[in-house]
Length: 175
Image 1 (cartoon, rainbow, N blue to C red):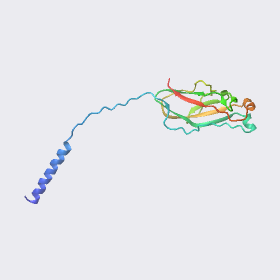
Image 2: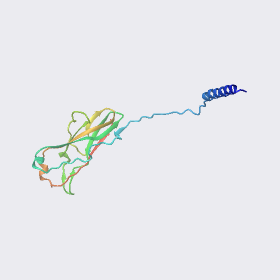
Image 3: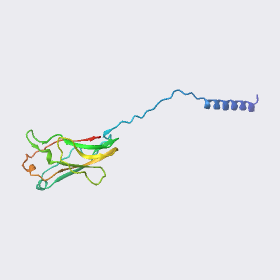
Image 4: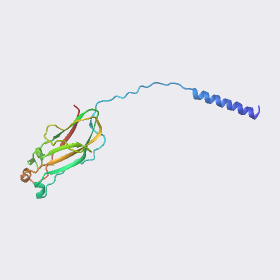
């Protein structure tokens, strides 16, 4: 066989192999893939950037004679697949040393979706859940800003001068 003939046979064999290999296919198995969507209302997996502690410090005459307020941006974040509300409650009165307390009722709270213009109506927290945001629509990772306010009150003048603490608990609930 000549070199030219050998090249033709090799090229013909390579072409046959390529066509045969390209068309060879075996179905191994058919797999079912499900997407199971469940209702979710809760804390977003993205960590809020707002402080976890709100400190009201009274150290001047002006502090005692005026309302004090602190706005915490991005205090908490919510992800929900359905309409939801945000409720809030306090753990109890503010406590100082074992026998000293301040009423939880000195505190006022309001909230808004981060980026919104106006805060919701102000509430006075109690130990029972109260809606601070109502009828919010399904959302993905919505941040909320909270305005904490203590109006001027003579109660603070007569209280023992120490740090008083309570916990404020926010929950997202679906109707």
